[in-house]
Amino acid sequence: MEIAFDQLLIQTINGIVTGMILALVASGLTLIFGIMDVVNFAHGELFMLGAYAGVVVLAATGDFWIALVAASLLIALLGAVIYLTTLRPLLGRDPLTTILATFGVSLVLQNYALWQFGPVARKIQEPFTGHFTLFYLDYPWYRLVIALLSAAIIGTLWLFLKISTFGVWIRATTQDRVMAQAMGIPVPWVLTVVFAIGAAMAGASGVLFGPLVGVNHAMGLDWILKAFIVVVIGGMGNLAGSIAASIFISLLEAYASLWVSPAQAIIVSFVVLILTLLFRPTGLFVPTPK
Amino acid sequence: MSETSAQPLVRVENIHTYYGKSHILHGVSLEVGKAEVVGLLGRNGVGKSTTLKAIAGLVHPSQGEVLFEGRAITQLAAHRLARLGIGYVPEDRRIFRLLSVIENLRTGLDRHGVTKVRKKELLDKVYEYFPVLAERRNQAGGTLSGGEQQMLAIARSMMLEPKIILLDEPTEGLMPRMISQIREIIGVLEQEEVAVLLVEQNVPLTLEAARRIYILEKGMVRHHAPASELRADATAIHQYMGV
Image (cartoon, rainbow over all chains, first blue to last red; front, side, top):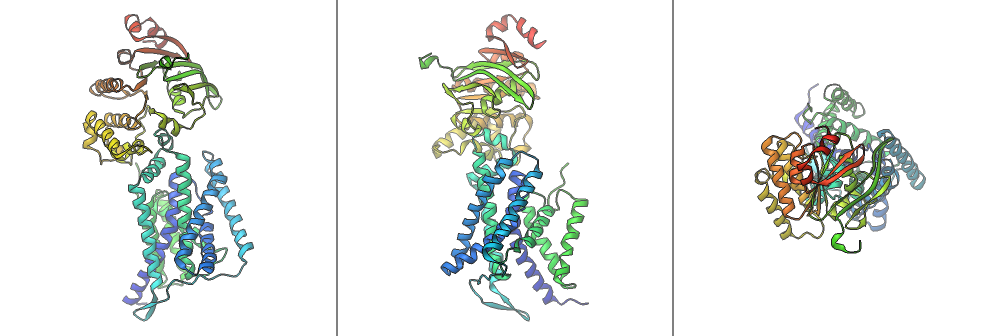
């Protein structure tokens, strides 16, 4: 079968747009893993609750942007509460305990959402509905805006980590928690804030992605699975690696769906995941440590 | 007791610590005065490093007290102790390897209540003492040589404007030239009225740099004497350290 150039370009744009959202979800996950070695299985539910918070605030205020900010703040707060009540008491124990604990939290949150909002999917109205013509398609502007906003949020996070005092504290704590304490860095506070930031990023991506799919209690599952795949492929705890892997995987899936159905195209990610684990278990985008 | 001038900067009173079930410190007591350099000698594994960690708040004694300027600090978190003025330079230096030299320094420098002017003064001062750090300020800490990392570890703790620095084997693995530089740095700290509690295997250096010496054996202080006394008569050193 011959692939037309326009189809290829459309899939490239699709891949990058999905990749940027995925990168936003995955960077929260990898940030949390990097600093406290916690694999947060509740991350997908924070994404889902972010979308629901967006639905509620949007209904109350009618403003998408207020909903985006409010949902992020709300989920940040929820993240901090989850961290303080569930994870802090488990720090320093077997990593398995935090995996089980966050998995438990994810079940609670998912069923809470089902109980609170019911099984029928809700809709978030996108802030603008304009389209532009991309070959034979009417391509929604909103999709490009999501990609740009995700990039902007990730860019802000990167600058924050690179330049600000708190960013230096976060990086120092990631590298050596004990020495960071000995240098006067309030490590318990740093860990709480990092968890809240990661949660906020999940919440923000939930709202941003809400208009493209229905908001329902199980929407976190697909995303969290993919986010884990890119976090592993990018190298656990490696922010830049996760972002690169998000775009890489999303592009691969987008191209694959030129030949097979999108549902089957997901197989590509798993193949890449397995190959990565077999041949470069530290991640595709980091030099293999000696 | 009531006069503040005689109050030691750090007083360790009969502390006991455990790692799991093994009893490491069996009631260590010692004092460091203001701006005083004190040496802590002993064989490997007698609890010298643990004593420093207990003062820095990184190990919490199950019994006994650590007092800092007369105040009990035994249960305070390590980051609060750092802000009170206890600097810690660990045995393996523990530079933040992926942070640049300047970022390593910023971990101690960026505190509440330190003005921009003061920050610059502090940086200029360590750059004057350690010109090599100024040269490499944008280089990752992990790329420095062992000696440079030791300097960075000491400079980093100086950013806290500490009243005492706990120095754990600063000369370990260094070339002789670097060792004499460490000796000079201890002199500089003394001049700046920073107290030093120095743990060392290098006995001649410790006897030269410190005013008083404690010798630890099996988690207890076995001997306590002015350094001058031990320089004249090394019997105790031979007895407890086997050198």
